[in-house]
Image 1: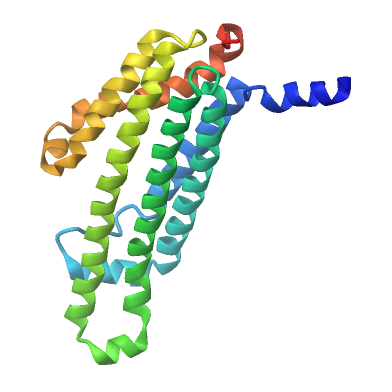
Image 2 (image 1 turned 90 degrees about the horizontal axis):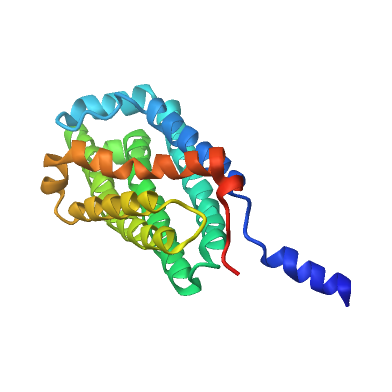
Length: 232
């Protein structure tokens, strides 16, 4: 009887704040690596240069795809950890935040298929015989443009995730309220991707508002254990 109760307490205990912080750091490092691998390959105003770069750096391009996929998988794990952290605050809102994050990750993963498409289209000899070089190059650039549009949709979903998480931070007793307001500001900024031209025009403000996602893992790593007072 005692062993069963002990198991139940351990199974329901929230994850360590520092564990969440380190997983978040791993996600950031993976995302940066993915961006560096494909840096300069896409030329959004030149279909021919984009196609030539993808063919010339096919291994790097596919490696960038693989690393970004891993980053999404890490964020899914991070979502589960955050759900465990905020569930004592409000189970319903914690589940809603996790839902927005998981759907956002799913949309990004589906968008990654569009980014992979150019390397498949351009390297396929049958397509090369059926279509002209300019047509294939245009198709490759179109896939990249659609990939970026899909990410705008994902940004809106993650904005909803930030809004709900910000409210959870405000309701909690183990995180500072300024972090919650920062996350809410980031969520409001992320909603501007509903109209991408607006988001582009205020990009520096969005970076400042979205920096709360860097501040939270830093807080969890540095002060997470000392300041952690989970609700009963």
